[in-house]
Image (cartoon, rainbow, N blue to C red; front, side, top):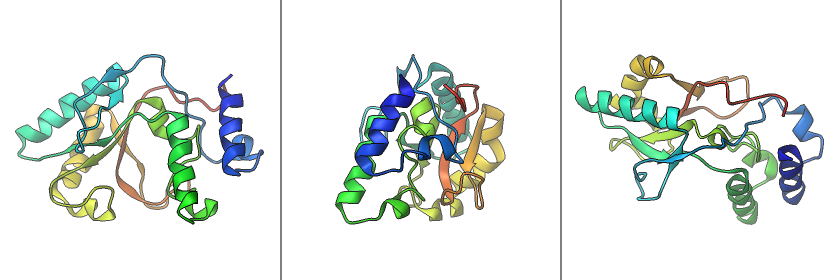
Length: 179
């Protein structure tokens, strides 16, 4: 069962047992079907749900047609990948509390759904707040919604995460509170 798997990942990271039931974030379900996308900026293989990939491809082409460059930094990440990412940061000496302000706990990352993308452009370093100063961000703010994408973590977001102008999610009913 998905919740049991997530609970085990939490325990191994030192995340309190009650976090799973009391988190402000929605539990994010991993999809049954993913398709390969183009490689990300770093040449890594990425995957999205078929619907999210179609929407991303159309949005990217529209941006290109408008003279704007936007590319994938990351897409689907399973719960184990999220665990390993957090474990690495703990190993670097960061506190779990500090990490969970910028990284969702396993089971709660929108990347698990196969609908979330972290985006970049040539005008700034990846995953930096300075992304909001780029033509790509201005274009996304104006146009992403028409392709089904929303910026998940604006300033003061309800999930309590740090502001992430690069993180966009394709809207779909694949995220559930209860599994």
